[in-house]
Structures are given as structure tokens and as C-alpha cells.
Length: 309
View 1 (tube, rainbow, N blue to C red):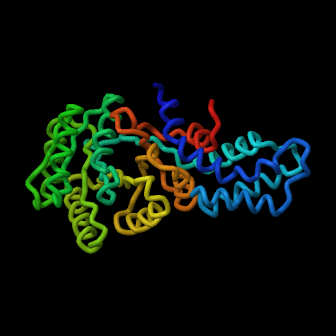
View 2: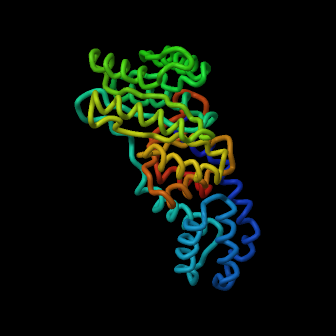
View 3: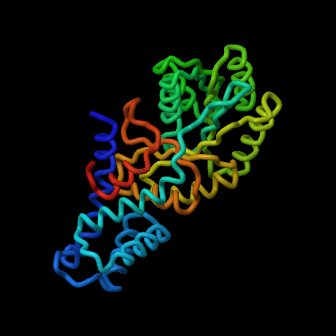
């Protein structure tokens, strides 16, 4: 199955939900009907908000539809406009992860709440970089959970990448220090660092991240080069709250959204792009190692709108 087929399948629940929310408008969109009135436009806007696209994106799409209200508009025409406007929102934030630059290694801090798919995403992200012929090392900086350390070590073996780890409860900054030293000595291109995701104790989280940053700064003033927040699409609107908190606490530079295949709330991707404008590097639509790929705004927009290629 191609990535496009997996993507379309992954967003099927989201597209179906959007279709259900728009279903009551089918009569209004039949050929020969009068131009859309304000009440119908209001219904369309509400349907978009109910599909988790967010009020700002819904308003933007409503205005685009209103601008064409005297054109003949059927359901496919509406979906086409949706796809065009969603793509216009997503295109500015689509940014593949770029690990060019020296001195090596390029350091990527990966953050996110427990359960977001953070550690799995690190493994898949490492594989994605390896496909581009980059040497990758993983660092188990989430020492709060033994399971996180073990899971990262399993992913390291799976993708053939070295893993720097320590014992549960160990010093995360010390592990990162050792990882940078070893990555530098062995010519590793990209060092991907797992971090703790304990939002219930923001002070501790911020202190730990600050310590990691200080250690990195002593070894390479440019590091970390990226601070990537992993989001679980199934959390819906809560994902927006996480972006806001982690942006303020950790200086998030980009996003990866996972589990889009397990939810009807994939529209939250559009809401996040509209509200925060942070780069979206990749998305995940499955459990397989190949199911995390660079973010393609056109393909995603058409998948959300329920349009096949």
C-alpha cells in the first residue's frame, strides 16, 4: 500500500465525520437551488467547528465559500473548496525536518506528554532520517519511566541505531552530555533525545529541560537545533492546550502529530496550524515503521475533505 493510500485511509474517520456534519446541507447544495444564504453558511461554519478545524479556520473557509456563493455549488464543489482552503492553511507550516549544519551532531529534543506516542515517534523519526543517509543516535533522556528507557532501546535495535541510556531515576542531563560526546566522536549526524513528559509537575519539567539545555550549550552553543512536540490527535482540542503549555515551557520549534488513523478528530491538525503557525514536520497514520512520513499539505487537505486523488 502506498503512503497516499495509507494517508487517505488514516484520515477516513476524520473525512467521514466532516461528511456527517455536512450531511444536512446536501439539500441546499443540490443543482438548481438558489445561492447559499447566510443561514446555510452559518451551518457550514458550525459543521467545520464541530469537525475540530477550529473557529478561525472555519471562519476563513466560510468566507471563501461565501465569495463563490453565486457559483453553482454541489457537495463535491464544497469539498473542493474545503480542500483548497485547508491546503492554504497547512502549506505555510509544512516543513521537512532539516538536519543540515555543523558542528555535528544535530540535536533534536523530543517532548510530549506520556501516552502521546513520543518514544515510538523517536524511533520512526530516526528511521526517516536514516532513509536520507543520516547517521542517527538515540538518547533515553526520559529517566522517570523505566518503560520509556526500555522502549527506546528496543527501537534502537529495530532501526540499528546506538542508544545512550542510564538507569531509571538517573540524571537526564548527564545522559545527554555523554550522548553528545559519543555522537561527536563517532561522527553521528543526528542525535534524537527523549525527554520526560510530566506536565503535572511543570516546575520539575522546566528545571530538567533547562539543565539539559545548559549542558548542550556548553558542548554546542547551537544545540538543541530542534525542539519537537509530539501530539496525539485523539486528544482533540486538548492538543492545542499542550502546544501552548510546551511552547511556553520548552520553546517548541516544530510539531509531529501521531495516531491520526485512530480518530475522527484529525481536523485538529488544521486548528493547530491556524492558531500557532508552528512548523509541522511529520505525521503518523499507523503503527508500522513506515507510517511516519513528512507532512504533505495538499495530500492531507484532500484526505480531510474526503477527496480521492
